[in-house]
Amino acid sequence: MGKSIKATTCVAVYIAYWAVGTILPIALLILCIKMSIRLLPCLLIFSIILFTLNIILSPFSIFKITRGFYGIFLIFSGLLYAITLWFTGLLLSYTIWGLFGAIFGILLFGIGVVPVAMIGSIVAGSWSSIFVLVFMFIAMMASHLSGGAIMSVSFNQESEV
Image 1: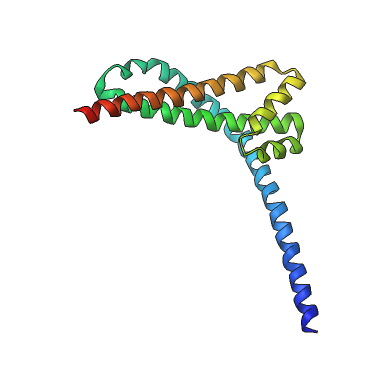
Image 2: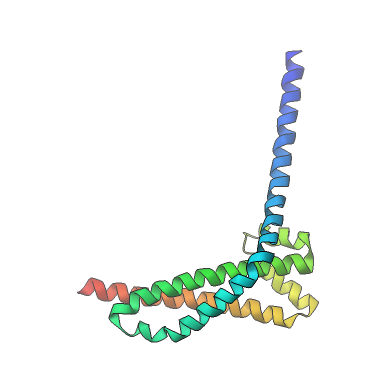
């Protein structure tokens, strides 16, 4: 009698783990998709504003006093570009390939939604979507790399003093 209760309990626990392990990630993915539908217009507007500010404020990298602050500003801008790129890739993957494409993109180390969205955009012939994804990727990488380089120069000059 006791062995059958233990066996039943083990089976119930395994079924509960399976249900939570399967349903919870899919529910979180659907929540991320719904969140991206709501947040993406605001993120795109903020990204455009930050990109404009990055260009306008670039002369601040010349002066020693403001160089560090501008480097930090570039790095944080790159983070916003990365978030916008990820949400754009997630929404495009879901729109073109459906839930399977979004799940497959998430399973590719979490950042796979962007390549999946690019491949889907190529297959669908949506060249404007590819342009947006490539431009956001270049802006993100350029912002991170230039911000890091400016911070490195600023840090080296401060340590020499």
